[in-house]
Every structure is written in C-alpha cells, then in structure tokens.
Length: 199
Image: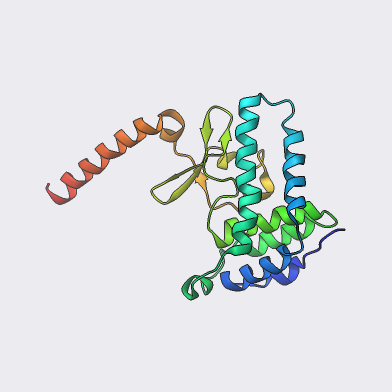
C-alpha cells in the first residue's frame, strides 16, 4: 500500500512545531519493516562496492534511516524551538518531495525523515561520519556541519543536497588530518587572542 502525504499542505507550514506534528502523523503509517526494506534496497546498491566501504556506508544509512525515523517519531520541542520559523528552502523542499514521491511509499518515508533531520534537527541528511570517496566524511566542527561533496551537489544525491544545512568542507578539511587541523586551529586561536586582546 502506498502511503501518501499531502506535501502541498505541509508546504504552507512555517513553524518547526507544526511541521514536527505533521511529520509524526505522516510517519505513524510506516513500520519497522519499511525501514528494513529501505536498508535492504540500499545494501543491494552497494553490491559492487568494496566491502569495508560498503559496510561503513550501510552503518551510516542505518543511522540516517532507522535512527532518523525514531528521532522524528519521539522528538519533542520546547516552546521556543517549536515557534522557530522554518528555513526559506522548506517550501521548495516540500514541492520537490511532492513531485518525487508520488506513488513511491519508500520515497515518501525518505523525504519525511530528511524533512525532520534538516528542518527540525538542523542536521545534514547524511549523518556525521558518513564516508565519501577519498577518505573524507561529513563532520561537525565548532557547531558547523561540513560535507566534502556539498559543492558537487548536482552529482551526489542532488535531491537532498540542495536543501542540506551542511556547508562544503574547507580546503584544510580535505588536505589535513583532523589532528593537524586542530593543531593549526589552536595556533590561529592563540594568534587571534594575542593580536586582539594583548596586542
């Protein structure tokens, strides 16, 4: 049975609290079997990917799909957060979802989870740690989400990347190891401190 969502009705919502309530109602029609089917389909796509990389991608997909669904269904917002306005791209996201999910129940579920993740939780569609070719991954650093493929959104999962709150990884993120970046940033912070406060 295809679960349909009235994306046009969701499109007019403007506050996080009302969107979360609507996502929970729509999400309640899905089952654990639907989540497992999504994972199984994703695993099939990884059949020809090297095993270690495929395993890491599947782990991230489980966080994205299963954990994302459970967070969506159990989330509660404080009044101050419930009254926060949705990002301006919400209407475009809902219109895009309306077109891309027609008659596709698992696509509906994917978009519901993505809507929660990006517009309620303010997190990237791909969870922190999701690996990408070249040894790069989605990272959270000082409150900012960085994605190594954000700039090439037309080539990688473009339907969600355009709406994702992550920003493109900085060049140093792609060249230096995490430890090297932290060392450089500590030096920059010290320089800033001595220049601005003791200079």
